[in-house]
Image (tube, rainbow, N blue to C red; front, top):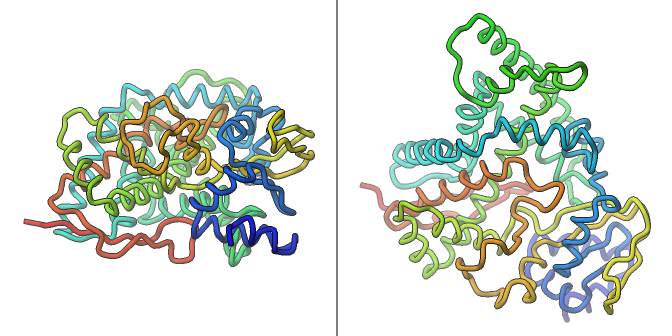
Length: 414
């Protein structure tokens, strides 16, 4: 039986759980069938959207499809808002501090830290704690400037906040929501206290004209754009905390999953390893983004319809979306739509870069740190593939969590 045959044979009340389970275990064949046979699938919990153009429409029409699910978890952070003055003000201000001219510096830092970890490991490493989390944390410390946290705390704070923001919704399968909620409440309190102390110390050093590093925290604290209720210490702390939460686990998951895809494809791996030798990283990076097309950090994004809306208008699957409906645009399905991705089952790193792959979101909520993540992710993988005979020792494992936890890789050392 096909997926849709099994869905249709299942009682309405049980259909969502069936589909949601498949999204965790066999997402690509499922979403391909939905896109080809039923591009809009309504359930009692949410509506799934699989056609490329419909996915784009949901993510583009933010006046209807809002990020309401983020509100209680992130307010008043900019990601919890749609087309507001606060969203644009805060994203514009923070984007200025995340200077794109720093990209070579960040890439060099990632290469250095990755090689230090690989050298110390001497031929085998659990890549999740040892690379895909470790290296982004070093970027958070060295480039963002979140220094002096107790050992392990940056990773812990990032993990639980990321878990809550992206994997603790009604459409998520969570074994113990109380555990998640308790941990995120504790971590938020600890993170606020840490950042408050960090900013006060950095401001005191600047005022005392002591040497301070050129990092994002220093840039934020040096700014003279303070106005009442807009750019005070609370604003600075909120947006600096967002850098940590938005960097570590997303970069870790993307890096681990893209690396797993490459290591599982011997011919592609050989070509990617050859491309890694080039001084120009663009050719190599394309292998990483194509690898993520097959297993992105999530097969879907999510929005809530704030008003009735006709989706798929004028097409056979035209559907009325009621106000209040949670909508999950299946970006994995969109990235395998043959209309936009010819021969989508083929691994093709030469696909035009302007073809949208949703790796950093789309539209109003495109990731503010996409240029930072855009070098962290491929450069870690590039350094791994520069080692002789990189290979999987233990496959990527989530260990019952929504984020990667273990992935043992090896290479020929010495």
